[in-house]
Amino acid sequence: MSKAFAGDDAAHRLTGRIWMLALAVLCLLVAPVVRALPIFARQTGQSCVACHAGGQFPELTPYGRMFKLNGYTFGERTVPIAVMAMLDMTRTRLNHDASGNIVSPKDGLPIFDSASIFLAGKITDRIGAFTQFTYSNYDHQDSDGHWIGHWASDNMDFRYVDRIIGDASDLILGTTLHNNPTVQDVWNSSPAWSYPYISSSISTVGSPQFLPILEGTLAQQVVGAGGYLYWNRTVYAEVSLYSTADGIWSFMSKGNKAGDPNHPQIYLKGQNPYWRLALTHEWGPHNIMVGTFGINANVYPNDANSMPIFTQGVTRYRDIGVDAQYQYILEPNTVTAQARYIHENISDPNNFVFGNSQSANLNSLRLKASYIYQAKYGVSLSFFNVTGTADSVSYAGSANSSPATQGWMPEIFWIPVPNIRVGLQYTHFTKYLGARSNYDGHGRNASDNDTLFLYLWAAYW
Image (cartoon, rainbow, N blue to C red; front, side):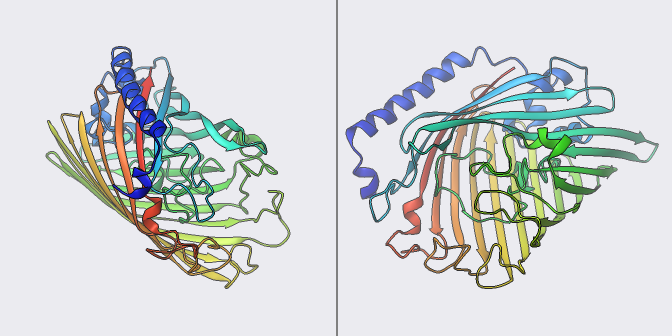
């Protein structure tokens, strides 16, 4: 055990034991209640494992993907409301910097993290929706150090779909209106629904600090409208256009606004195109997908008061990604694997983002594999690697002016009933902001940011 962990006082150890006991008790108390089927399972009459691989939300099975591609319209209309909550605890390997300042607040303490309300399901035979609103209990701190909670729009996806089935063809034609690039996607290798499915919201160092814009920067900031087709369960193609979710679309970005330093609104210039192409194949208990996707995004800068500047140009991002997914689903075994690589070119002629150059790149690789037994006991292993052009302004926290961050993430989890998941996740960094050791120039090493994350995810319908 490292000196950082071993040196914690008795109060932290006692807190950890109490937290473990609370998790066990909560599982026993909640389990009899949440055996009711979730919204979509209730609507279709199917069990949760019909849609989610090994019961692990949000990984979709072939049936789950078809359900989403058909606009969430399978089955009969039902009560469209659900709630979800997260309890967790984060532990950072070395939770103070060279000056003795705390790195991650609430470290080593159990917290009620967040809760979501879902309104989702079939509206008509051709129209369906998935909407989520989330409350973050420890969103940010005020000037006095008090924690402030925050309600905001979360993922949204509205669909209109038609399906044409012939003697030798099956064609799904659909339209989608959504607020997070790739949230409309049905494969868990694309960013919005990719691993890690649950991670610490408190830790300031427990994940890569810099990622391509397609990996979350525009989430709940934009409105996207697009059309897609899926032919013979083989070819998927989509084109969508994105603009700022303001005006009549502001309900899709509720919680973000210009002038709010904690939740500033991101403004895009004009219509910003996104494309997606995937090839799929199913045989027996196996299914596979290989695909590619990309986005061009023109982003206005914000000033020091988090207000948009519309008169000085934009920063242009071009992301191109390739991805793949494999699944083997045959009771009692479920095996899934995903891979994704995104290359981002950034054109910054006015040096809004970068100080050393007017062009740069950022690259992100994620590999992940999971095994689940009897839809109850699971293990996952993920590898991540971020590289990019050095810049002393954008990456000021790095002594090497580098975003390069690399590491591994093993996880074990237990699903006692379909609506509860208890997991233990560890993030180990082999490189952080360009170096294995002394990455900040003040003696902090990459492994000092290693993060242990214990969680209980529960839902009630």
